[in-house]
Image (cartoon, rainbow, N blue to C red; front, side):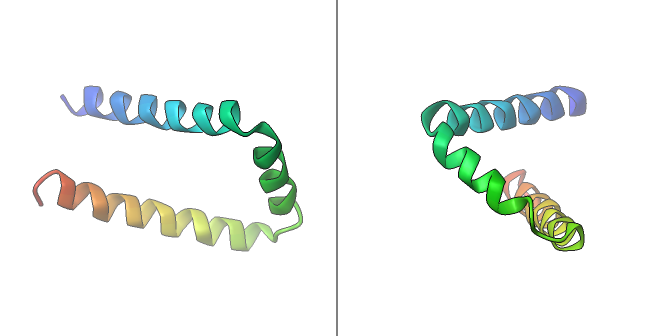
Length: 64
């Protein structure tokens, strides 16, 4: 069951990312262009925050 949940979550990520790219490709390209000059350490910190926020949200959604 855990693997099915993980695969479902990854599928939803693909759907959302695909929707953004499909609906607004120019805005997506501008966003990526703005990210390129950012320091890798800053991007890593933001990514870490997103992981922690996602885990906390998942904890509450699943009935923590």
